[in-house]
Length: 178
Image (cartoon, rainbow, N blue to C red; front, side, top):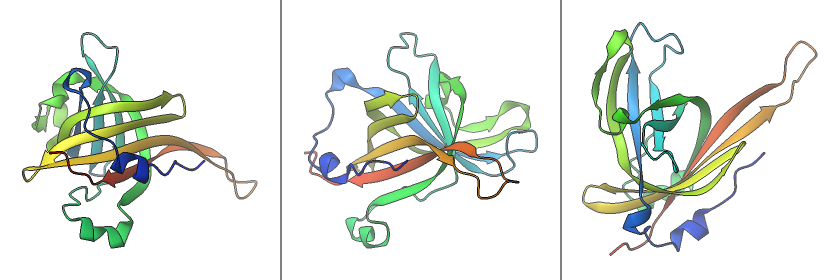
């Protein structure tokens, strides 16, 4: 299953109204020796859930570490303004991570904020979750669309099993927010 190409739609869309803002954070997680799920440092993508009136839980995925700075539109010649990678959906995390940086208890490592801001939920289904992210970087307003989508790899031989997983497409959008 392929992710949709949202680059032209996103480039023409203004920022979301203040009353519709949900928060997100992307944390670099440098893992410690006690984290059983993985030994690899990675990014944790965490999103406040619409409808969670207590704002207690964050929808969460992990991806390999990506360069999300994309500070210059001239860099688009390398990536087309998009990054795509594998993702793992994790259990929902506590909302405290929206504001947290530092050592995680139990020897599970350290987290450092990479991006944080607000997002607008575009689509939510069992196999797809899409949002438009808004944040500030070096005094400039930034926007990107993320699409986490479920993939299924077919087995290539009788010995292999089919596997399900997730992918992430991160698409930058450029427009004047002033």
